[in-house]
Length: 211
Ligand SMILES: C[S@@+](CC[C@H](N)C(=O)[O-])C[C@H]1O[C@@H](n2cnc3c(N)ncnc32)[C@H](O)[C@@H]1O
Image (cartoon, rainbow, N blue to C red; front, side, top):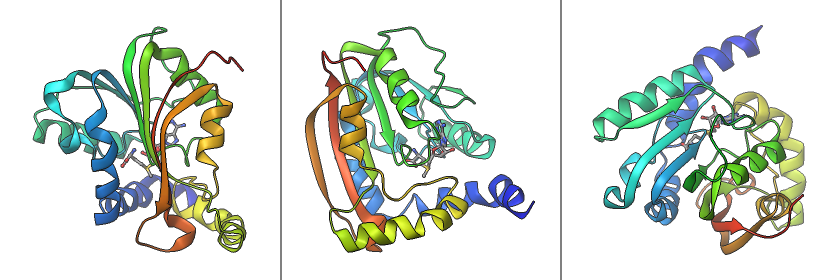
């Protein structure tokens, strides 16, 4: 009961606040300007990437976001940034878009929260054009065994307070397992608690492998 109330009324505001940190904003600056053409943003949250798009390179922005409160915030932020946004209240596991229809699929801090991540990645692959790019910045599994153990221990708490967020996802592995090929991969701790701050960012394209 309390969890349901928290998820519905408080969690979206916590996410909106936490996602505006200085170090996360720096990460956005490293990936979002590379989006181009027809773009699909996965789990757009409150739309914090808008101001980092290089608008002259963008044709259209589509987005999916399952949370109503965040979706409404994203709509407002799109207007503030003069962006025409096509947004739908759906999860990434079932994208209502045609095959090969996006030049860029963008995910920032969303992969940790998706319930069926492999299904969602398969959907992202399906809608991405053959010469398109998948761009991401995500937190995930720490390379330090001790920190990784803490990530495992803290996962149940993080899931409750962070809208289903997992701390220990091996981001490069899940992306590769889905059949993408990584064209650029960077990783490091950004400022913040170590269990939460190991970051992976870069881009991937469609490889030949189909899973
Ligand atoms: C930590 S927030 C990040 C939001 C945004 N991408 C950003 O960079 O600020 C995680 C987001 O994933 C969304 N989400 C959760 N499950 C999802 C799913 N199955 N498909 C798509 N988005 C999902 C949440 O509603 C939330 O907006």
